[in-house]
Amino acid sequence: MNKRKSLILILATAFFSSLFPQIASASACSSVGYTIEYVNGVADTLDRAKANRDALKRYVGTERNGQPITVNLAYNAEHVGGVVDLVQAVSQALFNPISDYNLHTILRQIAAEDTTRKLLIVGHSQGALYANSIYDYITTHGEPHRAVDIYAVATPASYVAGGGKYGTSHDDAIVMGIRALARKFDAPIPLPSNLIVKGGATFPDLFATHQFGTYLKGGGEEMVYVMQEQMDALVGTPSSETSACFTPPDLTLTDRVQQGIFAVVDPPANATQTKVVQAYQAAIQGVTATLGFVQWASSAIGSAHVAVENVLSNP
Image (tube, rainbow, N blue to C red; front, side, top):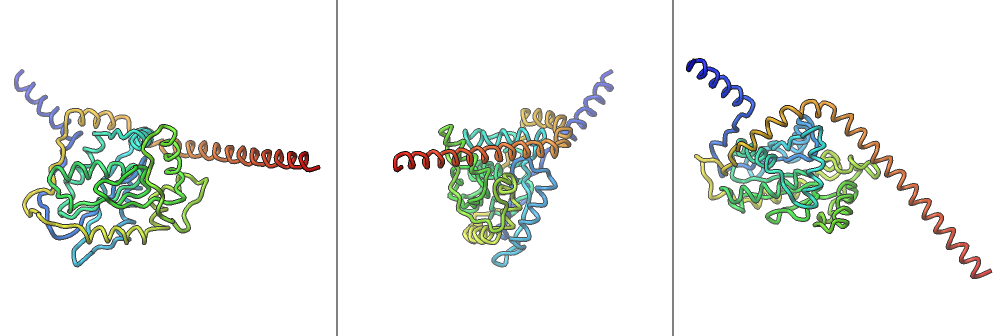
């Protein structure tokens, strides 16, 4: 009986370990080379996030100051077809609650991949919100402040941690909407727009104006120029050739439970994500068109009212 119980325990341990694998920390942290960690935005599939990372790679190149550049993806996973991500992103932007589970998962990814002291975090949309928390964590767990910087793209945040840089398009309808919500709820207002995205998507194509690909296509050269300046300013010392660049958070029991829940609910929800997002976009654009008509009609009525008043006052 004891042998049987032992066998069951071993099999159960192996099964749950396969469900919840530990992510090993990087084994070295060199002073030579640059690492860029791209943190994707809300409701991005893994394939789409990888495509954005690859596009960023092409823009930044493979070398800077005679040192190699490595571009990694710190994947901000979609959950429940992106619905959870969307709610989280808006609440993070307005009220600043950060999902510890997502943050810890991203931090463990970065710790496993980052082998150079000089680190630039490129966060897009919700990824820019996480980038602020990533900076705060890693600069208190092994990384010197001068070795890390942030470039935030289409950020809904009111600041960039560590005095980092950002680029938000004047045509970004999503950030405009979050600014309006922030004013309504007396919440921190996202940073002002500072980037002209040439030939980008236009209103009311709301989601396209906010996409990372749109930013790269229309403003990539200007964005990368700033990123290169940031990399030049990074200081790689003190560094270690034998230990990790920073200490990642432990995989807690709470993290494991959430992993198990998402492992069950995410696959079917993510499989229907396209239809959900399309329906959501259609509804938003329908409302936008309706509001546009109402605004035009109100303006026309207002103009007619003024004209009638002028006629009556000056017959």
